[in-house]
Image (cartoon, rainbow, N blue to C red):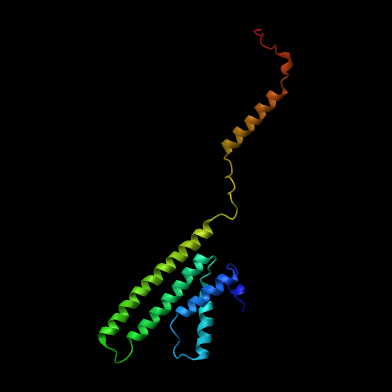
Length: 164
């Protein structure tokens, strides 16, 4: 599948750069084989596309969410290794908690950006609101008054005397 099909809102250069940077930031799959790396990249692309970034900032936030999530999983896997020093395991769990907060914050920022983008009206400037019944009556009365004034034959009215 082409990158422009996966991410139609991003330019191919931005999408490719973001995905390449994201893949470089992820820990290697377990076990680290060429087949697993290919599956890992495909899963990463699918997860990235599911976050629906529409601009470069949203793409960076989506990459941060995925990188943080992968780092959390890696650190928890490390902390659960049998025979690991308890101090090292505790540090890994602490770092995993910190990374989980980073992931949550980045996801919240991405979602806020997407909500703000969807709240913008499709046309700008927005269409004026429909007038109320009273406003419609006032506008009609003003039109009628203007028509009556235009219909007056002002030639019948004597001009004011000149001072000269």
